[in-house]
Image (tube, rainbow, N blue to C red; front, side, top):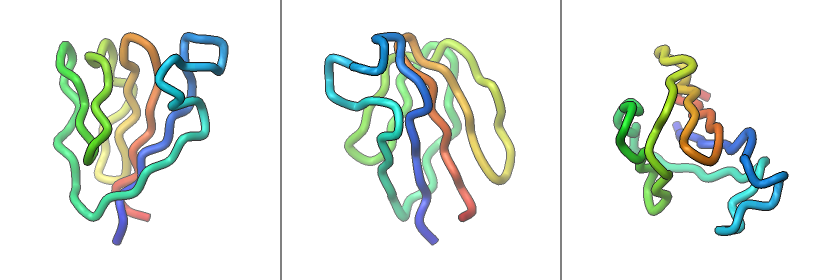
Length: 77
């Protein structure tokens, strides 16, 4: 079952300099490690800026904020 990451928000008015804007989605078949404050989050080839806040960690999803964005990871679709 694919794992999905979705960008919910960015601090650049919806226009992130790397082109990964709100609504961006990427799938993987590998369950990523849980986000850790102070470390980047890796999802396949996607590498975020360091995580600054963890909003939710459950068996179903991770929601976390990085320096520049907010992401949601769906573990069980």
